Amino acid sequence: MNKKLLVTLMAMGLAGIAHAQTNVTIYGTVDTGLIKETGSDVRMGSNDDSLIGFKGTEDLGSGVKATFQLERRFDLNNGVKFSGNNALDILQGTDDGDNGAEWQGAANVGLESEAWGAVRLGRVNDIAIENFGDLDPFAVTGVGSALVGYNILYSEQLANTIRYDSPSWAGFGFNLSYTLGQDTHHGNGSDIFGGKGYGDYGNDGFGVGLKYDNGPLILTANYDRLADSDKSWLWNAGGAYTYEGFTVSLGYQSTKVKSAAMNVLSGGDIDADVDQKDWLVGLQYNTGPHTVKFSYNRGEIESHTDYDGKANKYSLGYTYDMSKRTSLYAMVAYTDSDNDSVGEIYNSNGVTDDSVTGVQIGITHNF
Image 1 (spheres, rainbow, N blue to C red):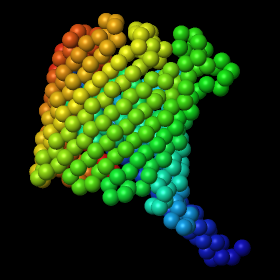
Image 2: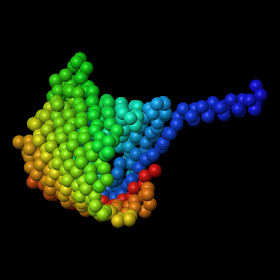
Image 3: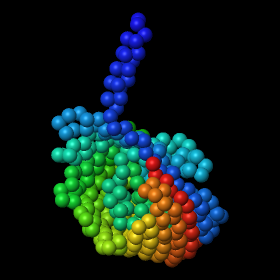
Image 4: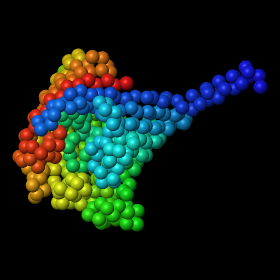
């Protein structure tokens, strides 16, 4: 075959492939620094989760696009796969750092349209966690994280889920999700829930979220029933207002964890129903590249066991944006609990102590 003709045909083929894979984006976050907390030695750790992600769209015509997203999380300081702190992964047995979910972040495919919104299937962000996280000045990360980050049912991502996000109407929108449980009605999962398996305590899950985000005001209210949790649930509500660089936020979250799920999530330490309540007050001031952050959090655990009591947390932080993509940060936080057992749940390093002070410095780059 004529060499020029062959080259031309190859070029046409590659052009066709490039056209089919329109709008593919590689993105990510790399973050690490130093952390020192009471009861723990100095260690390297992150504020934002380090990740690499791939997302893209393909125009299907008539205003409809196909979408996909894949995120792989990892610990930047040692390259180890990020195992996460995800209640649903624990309940479904995929939380092992060596053999767990390969894509700890989002991993989904779907369709979207400006007219009717977006549908995604696979591993998606939990609605209640996503919407409520916008109220925390520390974005529920690092030693300054709001106490909702240590919620017993905390599941930043949900596997086996279909999620719908409506268009925004003058700032108002809503979200819906439905999660398939692991019960196949054949006695699977007999090694969990005290040997009774998913057939006794497994359930499908669902989430509903409402959000108004228009100009200086954000309002949100959300409900989440976690799959495979014996119908354990949480709801939260709150809002934030920004004026001349100052942002004030308020939030409240209430959680009910059934004893069967609590037994699994605690590794057998707690075999009782647990009620958890968390309050958040946040304040930020931004001027140019400088952002100062403060938050007060109060948590309450009611379980009629040793894990029963209250905790208060105070966080102060500063971020300096060196550019649009790179920032330096520093923060200090103090958590004071009624007893060691409550501290074990709410302390950012998980130590059994009734008070913990944490200091963190580091650098974040987004690409």
